[in-house]
Image (cartoon, helix red, strand yellow):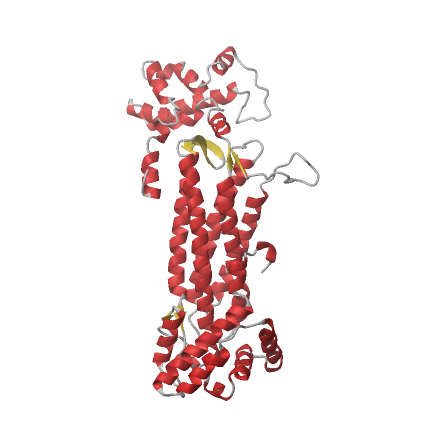
Length: 464
């Protein structure tokens, strides 16, 4: 975990003090259940709570580390230090249990704690997205496919799509939490030979978990793989939103940009720069979260009833992925909350190329008037190419020098150039009147292209 990209609450979940506190509770609750069964004296279980339930200070943690350097076994080191606190009654601790009972159950608790924070984080993103989506619900902008101008949409619709995606991520994380929150107190190879299943049930209840149906000494790692996959998909949703903002902040676009604080500097060399550093950073952090998926999938296939090839992996990807995603979600929420939006630039870009974004409307109108789709497409495409030419552009020959004709100059004075060229096309004489063309090229933000925005918002937010 790198402090630069860590938030204290999530990082604390993976600190030794929290881990050892969970280990203690697992062992102490197991003692209670064993005492209830008469396996160990009730006084022993009481002694564990009275003498062992003390804070895991730096001194205690250092002592455990010291013992581990000799034993080379983390759970034995923990139990040895606990015995130093509890005394003679500590001999009844860990009765019938194996190390994985402690390790896997603890990991389930830690991952549950982590996903609870992540769910809160996603809710922050959802709140920010809904607020800004409603703010720009009917703010028209050009939609882009393949990076190329397509048809008009609204900035609110753009943001509502990201909201819907994060809502799905929220649901996936909830399912992942349910899957990961299982407890294994089943002993060596998971047969309960030396410990009663009721002990597992008791510990599970106390730790907020459910018993693992079949633990082969370890909790099956398909559960963990699903958890990391859910986080990775959330990271990808986050990156998609970050990339959208990065594209919109480009100098030649400038439809939206990250907030630039007073005194902030964009470049050490070029004082004029305002770079999308936060969303670029988020793109990188998303890669780190996704990086955990393949190792998590490879952890599923362990040897026989268990091996520890998964252990070193999880000690790294558990903290790194959750801490990174927690940080990233809070950062993107703040980016959206403070996002600077330029509606005038959006409208300018929408109208920049003389109405060609309405080519499909014309094509559909021609099919309604008896033209085959192929013939209508050729007519509209032919006139759209005339629009490009009137801007001094030959899409088929970018190096060509375009000499504007009188018709090109007249089109330039009309604003909607596609409408102008269509009105002069001999193949459309008597087919599309001037009134028809006026209707087709109505780009009023509350008209044709936005007439179903309320339906979209109803589907996404549950209300208009």
